[in-house]
Length: 284
Image (cartoon, rainbow, N blue to C red):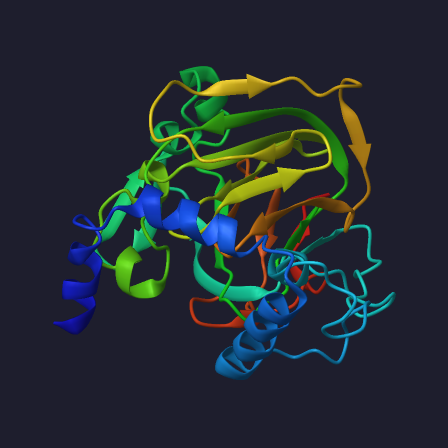
């Protein structure tokens, strides 16, 4: 009952106003203020700071710089097996499995349409029909950078404006079409197994999503899906290379076409993941 109430109270919240406020607070450069935020956040969420690249908290100019922190070299080894699909993030598996034609499972008893998620033409959506998906939730304490789950060529990035509901388990269990309602950045890839997509889903308090090619993308509640031009055209990426980061936390969805590969037993709802560990194997 409490989870249902939390989910539906979000309809009443001024989500964009709150997210804009968090965006500004997270970028305040007052040393005392940002150090206070960082230290309280670390204690509140029991953040593991042992593998952070910079010194805590002095090397971070703002709280947001800490939130999108880099890790020390070697902190997240990427599985070297060329057939391995790796986790793109540190997080918890929300759902994973096979699409039923063009339908994706969101939570028990709730699913949503692939074309709604991609907000693209039907031909692109059909490329993933009966394929596989993995939805991974990033909690506040997680490392919040997103990496390529397999090698391929980044072909395009599409920003889809939308709402800013929370994406935690309680909300996913009660708000239908959550990931297709929220704002998101869809990264389209071409791989040796066909198309693939990595979708960065925005959420309450996610002030923006950043990639090296799009720069910082701020939330827009209204408008149409916008293809963001890659400055130098398609980009070849190795498995494990950086794709971008959430300026505050959210969810990542990986899409693969039919027969491209299979997920491992590790990829079950509730299991925790670390970026770079194998979560599946490519076919062939």
